[in-house]
Image (cartoon, rainbow, N blue to C red; front, side, top):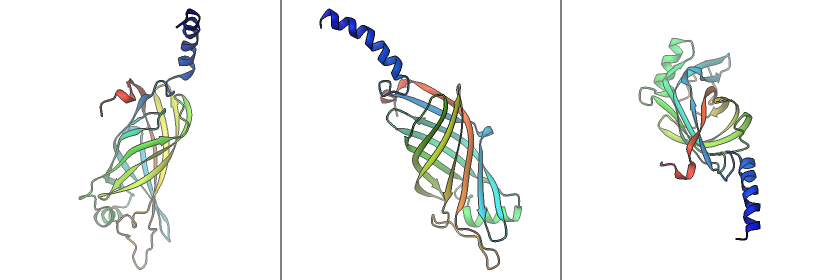
Length: 206
């Protein structure tokens, strides 16, 4: 290589890497988001002809690895199905015994497989996450739209999902008098810690 070309590269390469930043394909840097169960709400809403039932579940844990450069994602979000409460003990017992069968299926999980959309390491982003939602012993492909805000190392996010629980094999608790929807709305509002991994994604041991 001629001396002049070497000098040009010497000045240009640092500028390229500076502009590229950690989200560039040049870096292919994987990041990890760890959700904080104490600062996460998992709400559900079920409509019926008389009123709307609201309730909550507890998040056990949530760790998501993702690479903004190539869209790869992995990890596991784990929800305690046995923690479901709606504020009515009789209704909750029926929900756990006849619908969720939570003694047999105590957990619900989401396993991310792919992400897309514009991700910003600081400030606001709206990303799309594809993955598998497992509940009541069955896997279902889902796509989540996730608005996210990152400040420093703290991330806050929210998402929602409509669960066609009857279509997914669970019993509709409707009676002759009381008719409820065959779908339930699930909403998640969470916060956690986000950080770049020290290793590039392609060298990570899976």
